[in-house]
Image (cartoon, rainbow, N blue to C red; front, side, top):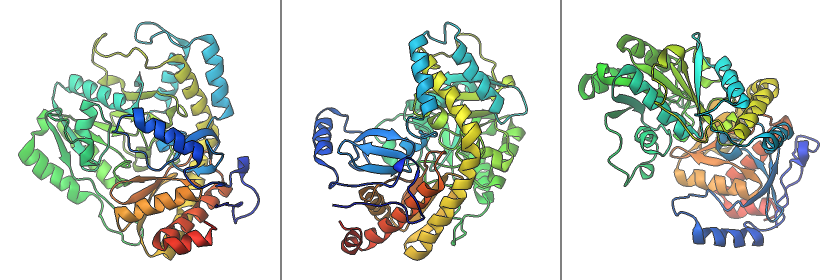
Length: 456
């Protein structure tokens, strides 16, 4: 049995956040649920480790056997205000009592409008913005592809190696992070080309350059030999690649993309489904580069776990007519109410805290990396940080060891672990996560000794 006490940095964390593992994982109740799940769930699901969640509060998740965990995965960067934030819960309950569904494609509804107004107000454009609400991130990608093609009257799309944009057919055609995500689903959408993405490793190694080599490849090889710029509707880029490994794009690279788009009449689409909504300390990651896209995509952290997303574009891009695009459920009043409460919390608490706690977390991770001897890179912005190991096997072992000590993380890329906690995380929780992660790195290197040191 492993029991983890309060953080070494001092008193008990908010919500009694020090994780407590009081049974072998998975516990008996978890094992029973996993067995039932395996009998009915699609085999395409890839659970990272045997967590069976029962409840959550703030940065803490409790499983069905009563074990508690610090959640630094946040449901893949979705639970931006933490689990079950009281203001979000109150907004959901109040709206559910009032109206659950009306179909925003066909009728008007106040929360739908208010949420669009709020998103338009924070859009990273000088030009006025308009908004289309979706049910998910992948739907936002699909809608943006359609809008770009309609507006430009061009078919081609440029995406990037390592990028992840979703799993429906159009979004999957842009996705290039893992071959298993695309295998067996062809033919995909034609005239999609993938250019190299600058994989800059900033910590110690300092490799990857400023993106000029990748821009040259795009100009000379993609545009020079594969597709004419006049046939390209849009370039779709993640300012920080998510599933691809938490690689931030250099500012010069994003500036170069903007210049190419301006030169050839191409739309620049920023996929901020994972990097947006304050995760980097600004509403949008692309703002750190001072670059304005033409369309920006949002979902994940937009409504604290409720299913809603959006694509937001400059007003001049919206040239399609009524009926060109729609959705039955998107902009659902309950989801929109959760989104409005989420934006309030992020504006008052999350943005500044993401920058401050992100810097604290990065310092802690770099300290662990310095002592580990097995970390290749620590990178990212704000509370979107990746730790790259020397191999996929090492990353997987550390992820599992962290789980068994009460810390939830997720792998990304080829051999990295991502840290994307709720944006309301506090210093005690950050320090506790760093300490547990350090123990997990040590245990993964020497499993028997590592488990003995924590009482396992």
